[in-house]
Image (tube, rainbow, N blue to C red; front, side):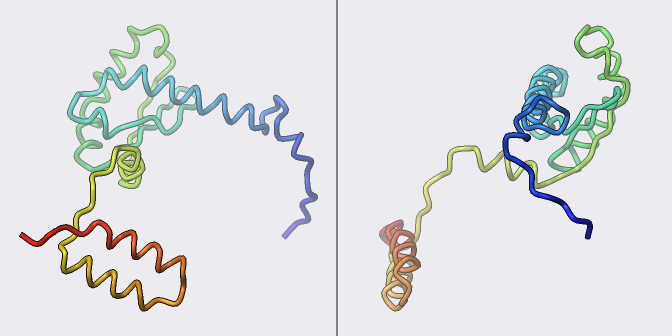
Length: 153
């Protein structure tokens, strides 16, 4: 492996192509482009597709599942025609769609979580297991989980 000397952290904040400023600018551009093109997506897949990258006229879109990718691929010719009528999107000459189910999972993690409910029996079992643990940190976590127990119906 070639020698790579350490670099001063200040060098990462310069305005060159390798700096964090450049990376932040690319992220903002991608998010802005995502907002502009998502209005052209069919409503049924709008939340399942997002811009991954744009470079040299080629737009790469990530779909959360195969059915969204198939729907998007079917509509690519229409999308390209619609983009040509928008001055900000005229530069898009090609669209490629890729599937990444993890992208949907990441987006889902941002949604509010629903409460977890355990039966009283399960909660008691978890609490009993927690009391048998030597590790105080793990014991505390297990007790917190057991606190979600509800009465049996």
